[in-house]
Length: 337
Image (cartoon, rainbow, N blue to C red; front, side):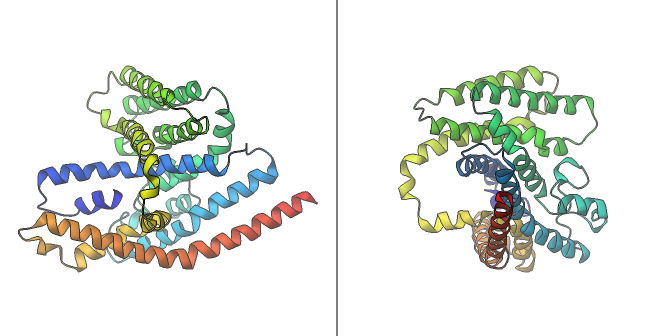
């Protein structure tokens, strides 16, 4: 989904209907958020409170995100130095902006949020969610629906205030963790709903209704800015789609599951690959068949990105996983002494 929207944004001459459909690819990021929250609950079913559990948890999360992201910082800095502006112009690569990205706290800084690594805003969201996850998971042990609805409403209220009473760019507010936190919470709620073996998903329906009401009340003066909350509607839609797909999970091919395991390196690298495909392989050959060539470009970009992702998984992710296991094992041994 994300690849589709980024390719469509760089191509000219696409039919208006196809271009419009491609805009929904932006919601692929929210699908990542939702699934990541669900996965975090799945792999951390017990409360993360004791230092012997909390410290290894943070090490694992940081090592999962940081090394590949640092490769992205270097890659897009080199591209910007060569005049290929994708993440942002070379002037954006100040020491503070780069440091914020290295520490994965770029989401809260407007100049660093998305202008060092393209798509970096969502990696910043991931890191802040993982930072808050132990607290959120403990907080949602009981009264899940009410607490989730309250946090979503609070996030909507803060976002509405930022839109109405500050001069911050709309795009920055949309990317901000306070506006995206509801997606993660809906993913956590989905996990807890499945764990409780609910058949009706009444909780999600009530959350959907309460979210619509709160958004309507809070945004009564923000007509024309409603797009900034569309991700909540997308998350709810994904929940019902995922619930339907659970019945047919055995039909999902193994290659697609493996491709999903490479989604993070694919996300980091596909911006550079799309530039390469669309500019080095001559975007002017669109000719009379833009829709067909668009599909060919998407296929080529996914295929090449997957190849690079496989290499990065071997070169970066697997060694980091081994190192993480060694570090976590040593920390746990020392804490027992």
